[in-house]
Length: 392
Image (cartoon, rainbow, N blue to C red):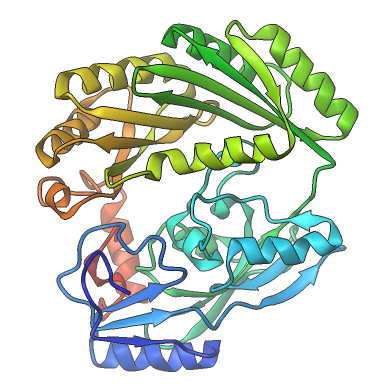
């Protein structure tokens, strides 16, 4: 297993949290550049490291430590996959409502990257569902923050701090989440459009109405072709009523999908930004600016001669763009995205080495960068964690 093509000098699999603490303390004392790995699905994300002395795999830390189904919470070890966890939680009619395009995605990896998909519309990101965390610091100290019930949020900021830190602050050992009941029924209205303006107007119309959507997603594929996906999960009666109301409101060609075709539809939606060997970029925007974002994407595609595939959370203002083109053209796309007033937080998640050589994957440092560097120094004074891959 490599880290963006760099082979670690050594790979270790601690059998428990105590062993993880010992290994990290030894690595810190020896100043060994260390990367924490879960399912290995995002090891190509971030800057390419110069070297990796040690990879610590969480493969053996995969227990569902506690499922407090009466309280709708669960504590899970970082190496457990989301898919396995939800299979176990389903025995009590509950689930952890997170989604990822990667089947092997682990709990620790989801938190470390704050990875999310279409379910973010209703449930938020891993950061939003996290209520407690156990961390192992670089010097081997084991610290806990938060609690095991939703009302206990003491120390919760530490959990938020490591969310999206890409393993650069501490190793996540266990995490406690608030859960949700499994829905009784699900259905999706898929709407196709000929004009981007019609899609944007319908997306804003649906987002401003009192629908209880589980997901409200847009997709633009080369052509261009436009699609809006509105998902409802509730009781069978409520689901059918809302789907019918959505179908009456939208202006495009609409159809209702349920069952296995619906599962395949959302699986394809999540996978669309990751197909092939292209570059995948994460974007943010104001939800009301969706029409401007769609216009910008088409203009940039035309100006650079690249094929762009866009998927996004329409009411949240977050999404992914896949760029299929030569490295020079791809770098030009990233530069234009970062210069566009309608877009913010343009981060290159995964890209070929030739693209990373032309653009910094994280872009211009944010205003809080000095504060984050100070926190990094406090928690990891030897600077061993994450091999300089960023963002801290």
